[in-house]
Length: 239
Image (cartoon, rainbow, N blue to C red):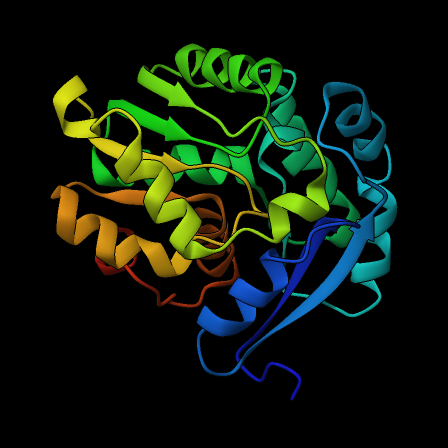
């Protein structure tokens, strides 16, 4: 059913199979999700750069559906060129639909800020080059990245085939976040199914856990003027 409270537009890479599934599962009652896709097969710097050129075209298509807010749901695609590019992306999308827009990198930043987070342990499915871009982005945004570890996967379909259990195991089997002084764990990538792992990880670690889709959904709902719901401390936080 079309959202009688709000309609969210979601722009994802064409090979992303996780974001819309997680959004549909956790979106508040009365909110509908409408998808537009940008071509992407491999998660590399070059491919992400080429993909971003199609973002405004996707936003134009979603504008025809009269969405209330739009989310650019790609973590590395929105942080690739550092702070500033992310905000330009949001502003361009907002101007295209004539309404609010969020991009995952800035959604994660807002989530950290709302939770008072300064030091993060980052876990990704990415290769080392993208991990370094992510480290540089968050450090430039004022956060201390106490550790960052990835799986070295470039095929986005392979990333999407991972499970919340894989995310849980990656966090638990790599360096213990609390031991290296992290305030929170960030599980990066909108195509990494991991929302269901948030609750168990927070229970085990005693730390907030933020994922790309959790932050993007939370921020998109805020932009549309709808209170969000979901697992973990982020969704229970009230300003």
